[in-house]
Length: 371
Image 1 (cartoon, one colour):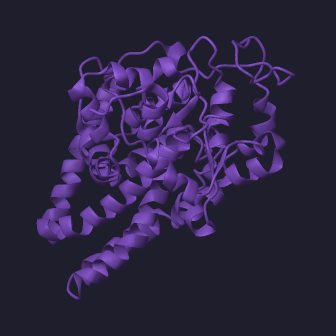
Image 2 (cartoon, rainbow, N blue to C red):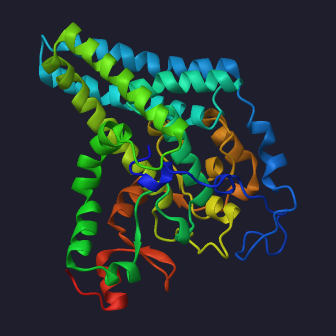
């Protein structure tokens, strides 16, 4: 899930900003920094082409193991209200897992990679967007900007998690530092963050939005209001909140954490635009979060984020096979579940040490004063 995005991410942008750069095939210096030519076909195109073909049967299985059980568990939670709210919360745990898995399918639809047909991806994405309270067109645009700028220090803020460098943090005033500290606090990020990213932020319309992005947001808002009103009239507004809040909170917190660790780990790749490399940003700036199989199932293989960022056309059910079959992926940054949890300590990017650091490490390295 994409926890936060700058209002600028939905504003009018040159089309060149969202186009996928192209690079030469890897030689002795490929992917080692420095500007790369855009005149040759990217080396990964032929390599990943066999994995970029959606299979209708496999896609239908994905829907049957995500959306269907989520809706079924929502019904079970409703009937459990007459038994015990503790039972409702127990059912909410797997329900949130299936909701998260549903979000990964929605995410694939925005890349046109889940179903073999473009129009089918669009309409499925719009329907799933209602379940997830997210406008398909707006989220798609913002996420494309994220893929085009991930790891670029000069283009932060487009669909990513706001992160300051040590120097930028030091240059802020007391209130600016305090605000950033509060934002990066785990309680705020994983407690309030899910409701902001799923319930509030997708409803907002900003000045300068592209017409199609603004229309996507407005139409989705209307559809969400109709859907929620109908459910409240059908089962009662208290019952609706008792069912929806724990599921959204759990799935949202897991989604925010997933998005965080995909690009927020100690030796993450970040460079200024002049030397930024799309391939390096994918292979060195996107993690391979190696999760237990049950968690990999519920997260739709998105932990193989390095493959996804090199080619967003690979459906989630092909990511593991693409990783296993190609040696270029076998030396990417690997995070365990514990590594991912510990990465939450990282707060600032240190340009001198070229890594993310904790508050204590930043103070020790730069003589930073505590606000």
